[in-house]
Image (cartoon, rainbow, N blue to C red; front, side, top):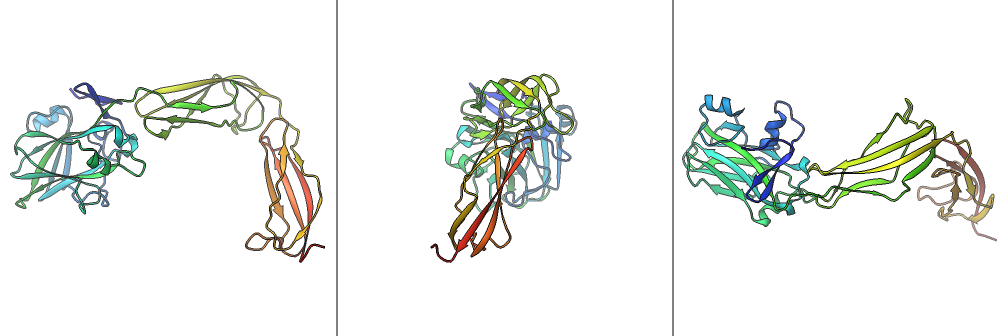
Length: 357
């Protein structure tokens, strides 16, 4: 029996992918997980569509007269001489390099049926497969690396493509059944993402500001960064999202598309609010330079406990469109701010002459 959860189908000694996507309008999670189909047609990829689409469970399929041999959900498509739908694997983040085969199990009810797969609405074909035996279920498979690579998006992951069927003789009112579409992986991923954090395990900070850490979670197998969840052992922020005083335990977690997860635990000490402003380290308060020069001044600002942001603000008319100094006497105001909102300013006079004496 097929498994339809956040797991992979067993196929021989290998594991094949079936992930659950968020449902589109009119389609359930189980239906999307089974067929990876979209509610609407992507005209950039899919040359064929259907007049009607019905997805049955096992009981309803038997009542509707679906040919025996299916497992679980089955899709019935009715159209004209050609019928099809859009397949979308993009949210699963499956590297094409890890795909052994793409399986499409179908049943042809008309004579001389052809299965087609395209990424550009039929300008070119990734697959054109003639039915071996109309009137029977068949597992249509793409295995060659070159064809699978054509199904990749710009990040090298299995993406969006058109999947369709066509009669040779132009027969109208065509009907076809699809039992499943799945990706069989070469080697399932069992390694969790790596949480990259170079800071201390005991973080000391102050109240009244947002909590931020330089941390990422990268998965080598899927070649992508995954979001990180933050779980405090007790409420650590106020209604505005700012830290409040106390001792806390913070657990950071990240999971990949295969369900593998990693975590990192930190101790966070939040002390009383910081009221000390940053210090701007720049000695001269008057600078003589030449008009037409680019602003190449650099400044250093330090704070007792936070990172500092320094903003430069020139007086009106000090810089031209190319950001070069104009002739005259100008004012440059430096504002340094820390994460709590403490700030300090320094004003510098800049004299820009035609030529330096």
